[in-house]
Length: 499
Image (cartoon, rainbow, N blue to C red; front, side, top):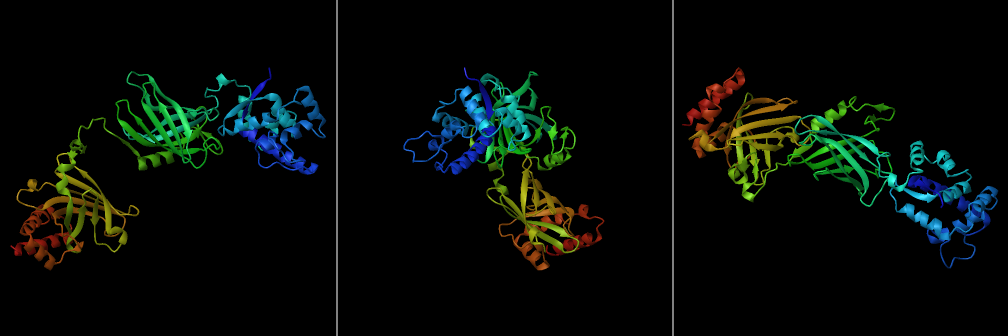
């Protein structure tokens, strides 16, 4: 029985690259023709071959000017090697993944290596310049592995995964390993642990499955013993199996022990077998020098979960305890009045569209501040609307406002009272105070409100005058800000004069 050894695809590819270069040199030297391409004719397995066209198999077995190769061919019975043998061998490797391996007759690998001037195949992979040291070590490990020994994770790539925990509100870690040296029909074997350290009965949870390489991402499908799924989709610029990427950014999706679907970002960092992070110079314990990862995760917080509650009809869909039809009345345009120590009464324009997208419009010399997208939140009792407005570029200004959204709570006053807080690192972008919100589909022109504008608004909307007096001009609102207090007093006198 002919002895077989396991050969890595990367090692075989490097060997054949050198063999083809030497073959081309010999063909040229002998005045023969090179076969077209590297198919059947290249290996001598073809019909109707043109005259004086060489092929690799015949060139190898002729062993011109190479007594060592001639002796090896004779002693190992290789003179009758089929022209189809090397052709099939090349096809076997072509079907494999970048880090996969194939079991090959040892004498054939020695034949190719001796042809190149090496003593044996072992001499080739240990000394050839094109093979990196880590690859030599792996080749030595897999050389004599049998088929049933290849499923173990002895040659796995190990990663520590960092993610932000929804429950604990802190950085946590998981462990991930994948065996790139064993490509199966389902992908590369993979295992993950650390998402839920134990199940409800205290048994450690391990997710097992396979990683598949897609054109633009890696896709790892895993499952726990209770069949709960877990999926990792990783961004990549090249094949993970051909390049040891130190960092892989992933999106993780799974189901918690309490059946909540969840998703979060995971930053996988290459580690050794003991799960110590690998750097360019040294091995660093993962619990050291990870402050940059903590900062990234705490700021991004890409993590959410879906409640495990059934929905029987569209009308039952709720957000923060509110059904969509309960807050439809909030949709529209609003004048948001406040008092400035410089300009007196000022109005901003707030708009909530039918799809609940909302925007705050303000008057500013900075074009980036004039139109501010908003995030909204509505209290569960449907009495308060909270908006957080931010500029489109950067975070130089953030404005928070809370106001009543059910007119009935302010009795006969149709104006909606609220408060705001502006935070910014530019002059005039910070401050706080009360606001008065008036729904008006014709609202436009944010900025200071002149006496003439106010008179017209009060004349067209009698309740507006009463509402502004009850909110912005209340005695409780007066503060140590002398300029603002003067503006409040001026506004009160003007509004009382319009009675």
